[in-house]
Length: 319
Image 1 (tube, rainbow, N blue to C red):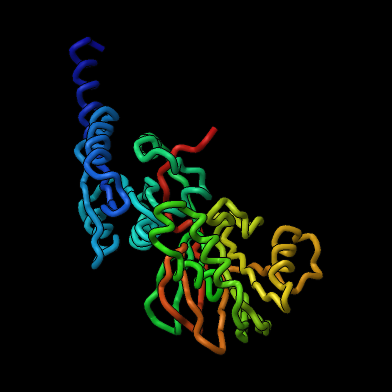
Image 2 (cartoon, rainbow, N blue to C red):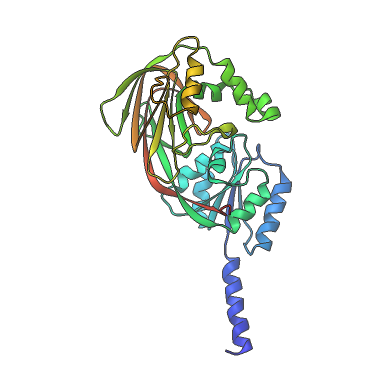
């Protein structure tokens, strides 16, 4: 091959690379402002990507509309830059489409990022890892609340009861100052409380009946503070893990801690684990409800089902 032809081939290859385009869906309340935007634009230029599509979330649209706009633009990757709420909204639109999602964590919890090993300390480094990453497939979970036909997606965990009350009542100012420790403070405040009667059915089987303080459904195991609530959970195993917390008596929460951190003892009725591909939870009274750490409201009924490897994530795996 002549040098001229080789140069032409290289030119064609370079042009092909330059057509790669990322969309960034960013929560402006979580970002560091124009500094990150400028850094991301420079990063795209140095890594052979064209100018990105930059879309900011609003109080009225926290990511769903922006994700649809990114899909319509035909971008190569959609980056969710913000907290867990932004990630969840973007994932809800991208699930099942094949278009990969990238993560640039900017929140307090950053739950999905922690579970799959994304850099949570440096937004620019996380961006680099997306632009130079490869694709993995993860499960998503669809949730229906109070028999609604509208389904919402979550990636890490859903909860009814005590854990959702923590999310609903965490002091924002304290969270800004001390990060995830603010959840600990809210958790201590909400230790007192009355149990509620619950029916929990796994995979359509006969329901178990319990008096509970909380029911949590996990798609992966790690929550705020790095605690492994679901030690056996994997985000691509096509299985949901269900955790029931039912403390009894004055020392009930000590029993819960013993059950969560000493699971080999199956006699502890304060903590029970179940697993399956779907679950249905019915309560006698309304309880607080959360998805991936976002307080959604109150509910008496929750139906969830896993969708195996429905979401593609673009990332650089840790060696």
